[in-house]
Image (cartoon, rainbow, N blue to C red; front, top):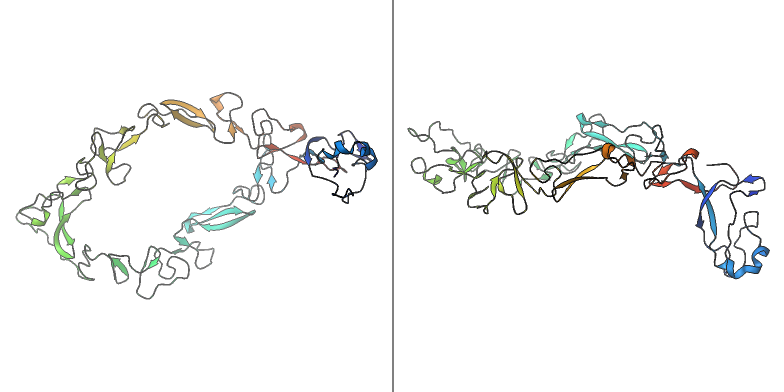
Length: 405
């Protein structure tokens, strides 16, 4: 079995056509079939004649067939240069770039009033709804995503799914969830609803001074509880009746006496005791919990029971590196890092600090910079206009019959 070798140099001229400046060789595989007959390619100036290699058949058989690659200078679809192209050419994919969709400067827009946005897909700005609950069920662009499929009885869960008459749509499902009943198209928990206490339409009557001449127990109010009107309940989610005496009424209760947002013995709920050294806090509006475990430092307003607390690993947090509030410095296109309580900077993927100065951070985009293509100092033929695409200098198949690409 023989192989054929495209063994030309860049200076060779064949039949009046000059070859392009060439670079690497790419293997195309064997050129002759197993029987030793030519596979169909005609002999020309680009191939050695069979007589030329007849005396060295064994050596030639071990050589891969190659095809020269040449420097490419023009963007190939869908890549394009959108900008001045001084250091980055062919830097935009027109099929998916929201700022240059199909052509440079064609920006896909958002229409928040009607909850509609567009995204570049296959070179066209295609509309989509900005919220999963909102859908375009009538097919009209003018009103955008008009249907809330979480509550729309005509489009419950998905467009066209109509609930039976009188049945509500609750979070995308026709009907009421467990523990609630359908009261005139609304899902109601009749065990604690003051307007539907124990049954739909049974509204509790308000009593202005139920404990006269005494005041109401601390942190309580009269409400519907367990389907009965006029029961004492806690008036705030912050306070709970942890000693269980609220059921005894006006004369025999201290009300909702426990602050479950700050009490380390009853954190978030009665009986939930925090470990030694932990705090009971609501962090950033979340339900209260026992916070700050081993390896964490409590940062925030520790002196104020209502002050916010964050539990920080100060050994690794760039915003609190080594101590609460000690933020690591940043640089353009660089990530601040904290390791073992010491600040530093690092470049994100495909960015690099090629000039060795953090003053301008990770200034190079390795995917498109012609002077630093894929790595610092790895330059493309900028004078010839060779672009850097996805971290590689563009190479194209040599055109045997013409000028540069």
